[in-house]
Image 1: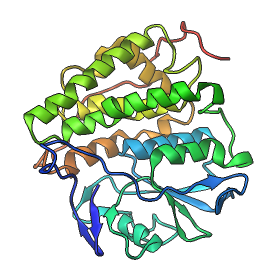
Image 2: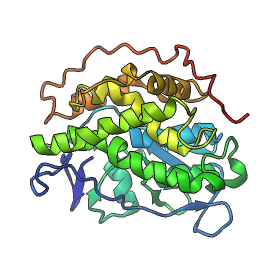
Image 3: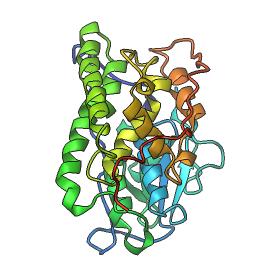
Image 4: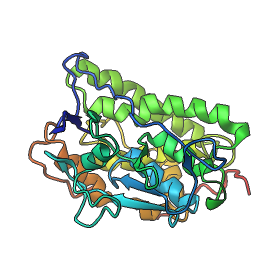
Length: 318
């Protein structure tokens, strides 16, 4: 995170003085849509769109997963920012941006809107034809990848119509207490605000453990977008959130059903290649200097995500 104000980058991870020590996430600024039916100005075309991501960011990670699962790797290009985010915000390695030749992500934002002032975040979906950002809201980008690219996409429907109400309900619960819950706990600047976030976070983990003891996946008998939205937080929990964000009432690895579930999702073809623990740990521990002033990155924990997941006894769609 960070803010671009009047063309000047401000290394502002979060502001809690006005919220009683509580972290509050701001809304994304670009909310247009890619469509396969011509109903929006952004038509589905191979090679037209470019995705900017961080391998460390769970919100960006979900877009990489869905891009892979929907067979869009050749249709939608991707640029990966450096793991560190310091005084210049998200930085791009030299030569990593074939669209703009940008070295900083805020340059992509101002290419879309020269007067832009606001959050500079990943993921970002860029339209080469219209020369602008389509969307920087991960939940909407994964929906576009799922059904907005028409015949360009393949693979499973991650948001099937009969399950949509249940998926939406699951997403809303997990966003508040899990996906954003770890940030509310980690970025809290008062004891009360931290405990206010940690308690429902661990209640959620226990509820997931109970659910996954009798259900293969979060909604129905197949993997849906709800599972991938949960996965990108859960796979980071023990390496980062447990220690760095002080979410240490327990580990995901100590919850057998939940840990097996994480391993099963990791082992879905195409997913392991999107998980980069070096980027993940380096970004959090070395970028958040208000939380970890030394920038020292721990060597552990050692996690075997490729170990057998032991969930084949639970029913799943063929």
